[in-house]
Amino acid sequence: MSSRWIALLLAFAIGGATYWFYARTRGDTVAASSQPPVPTAKPVSPQTSSATVPKRAPDRPVLPEQGPPRPMLPDGGGVPTPAQLYASEARDLDWGPRTEKEIEQRLAHLKGGSLESTECHVTQCQIAIASADTDTLRVAIGELEAQHGLAGLATSMLLSAPEKRADGSLVLRAYVSFER
Image (cartoon, rainbow, N blue to C red; front, side):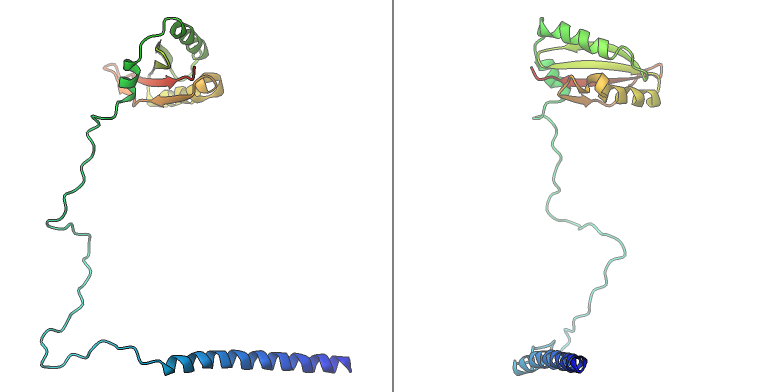
């Protein structure tokens, strides 16, 4: 007996939900139909010669003939390069040699290249790493950035683009900053 009541209740619930959904959507239609119609585009009469024809999109991008001036890139005159920042610092006669020695000890066993020069000023050092080709230079950069390299010692490193020498070898300059 109870299963009949459950089935009857379920049928009433489904019927009620269906009626509610129908009434809700019908109500939206009725409310929408009571509003004034939205004007559409005017039909073009034969007397009107200014019929608008939709434009076709260009096949490829086209730059405008004339327009606002294009933005210019800064000439870099106001922003100093890392080499200029390094050169502007004075040499610290106490800290510089000690830090140079520490860097030389840490980078003495570079597999990808050799430490060519090291010079430290007040908070920055410039190091030069020489290598035979780009593949070995990549290995040297990886070792430079490793924990046994300068990662635990320096606060930041900025690598320059490798310079190619007349004999085909490469030299990479790095500007290393320290917190003192």
